[in-house]
Length: 124
Length: 431
Ligand SMILES: Cc1cc2nc3c(=O)[nH]c(=O)nc-3n(C[C@H](O)[C@H](O)[C@H](O)COP(=O)(O)OP(=O)(O)OC[C@H]3O[C@@H](n4cnc5c(N)ncnc54)[C@H](O)[C@@H]3O)c2cc1C
Image 1 (cartoon, chains in turn yellow, red):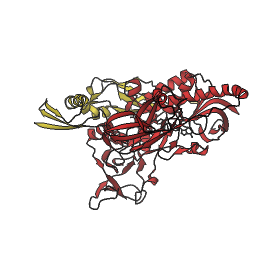
Image 2: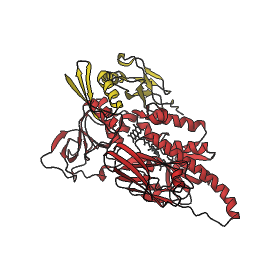
Image 3: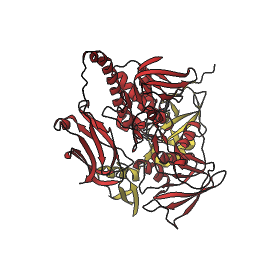
Image 4: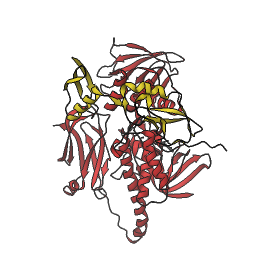
């Protein structure tokens, strides 16, 4: 049986939780001091996911880059693939919060959206 | 000279929320002065998510959180000037500022809200021996370079200090292709949020070495490496624990200090513990009509509390302006000046400071939030509040850490049942 060591992020307590696994099956969860710890540990060992944030290049905007994020969390093991997909993307200003920058990033079914409003640069 | 009711110095989350609250409380003539090219403050470079969980019940990125307040400021037609640096504030509330269009100019105001935020501690404040080669950055500078400029400052990185900015940057640089070798922290505990340790370090297998420091820096022109050593209880390096790390970049994340040159200059009294002004229940400094909120008052870890605190400052500034115009009429009729009573808050036994540091019961709201930080990690303790030695409140805490701000709520009823209270003590104690 395999043991996985986790730190709960539910509160500053940061309980050290040990999950005992038999293949994909959870046999035991120990070390947490409250229910939140168990829920967190269960999710972390079965389907850990994260929101990924980064930036992409903007052309013709008041700024050079626009912050972007995955609209929802994506599987943790897709993070680097997601980062790779963002490399080389150029978008054109104006950009508004929520604009879709890339659909279905790294085959996750999740879109990349803009996280900042960027206006067009007007030259006088 | 142009005149305003309220001038807000700084257009970060504190400045924005305070201006909005002042406007909502009936003040028309408000001006925000911001030296940057946009509103939003430090949030503009904080592209990670995790902002606004308390306020909006969702995890926003910094720019998204800022945008919600900026949109309201624009909607409510609150005026602001960008690229405008405030240089001086006189005790009679004349502000000297500078920008390209107007050059050096002065404005007069009835009330001022200080919302200048904080800046990072510089390396000079640390004591690292060796040359000063290129490749050493504060974590915040690195954050600005990567997130705003799209420039990766180095490939092999060591981070000193486990504050949140350092942790966030460990992940950010890893995602951009750098190798972050280690995060070293002088204290036996991390200064950052638990969530950041897990999601920024553990997720990427970056080791966190507690009770470690850098004892040597290698390289003359460009950084080539650092030597790490463990430290004992007195913070002294332990012989024989030295480890070499080759790296081209060192990020320093060793804390923030409120940016208070302006406040000091106008005679605002400073709390040496927070490096921010002493304030009363209204978040007013010892200078009447001068309020403070956000990171310039005390360093916050959660922006939600910055916005909440700033709204209180804005509301009280509005009240002050309104009272002042009324008082000018009534003062002519009456010689009498009401002598305000002030109750002092005393942080003791593990509590490092409180904001506010005094409360005038006649001016407080139904509930008064008192924010503070503790000086060490405490598990299974209580926070005790005493009015002249008599216990009025006990709150159990599973864990408290210096990196996470704490608060207790004092109610008007407590003051009503202790009409002559002189001082309030807040302390950490055994269960
Ligand atoms: C790197 C980092 C990561 C963070 N991560 C999180 C997080 O994940 N979640 C969370 O909730 N909180 C987070 N925070 C905390 C939160 O962002 C801050 O507490 C908040 O931004 C503070 O707001 P403020 O308005 O007081 O200061 P700031 O945002 O610093 O704004 C101050 C403004 O005042 C302006 N100013 C200063 N001096 C002058 C002058 N003389 N004249 C004109 N303008 C001036 C500055 O240019 C600036 O725009 C983080 C903070 C940092 C630094």
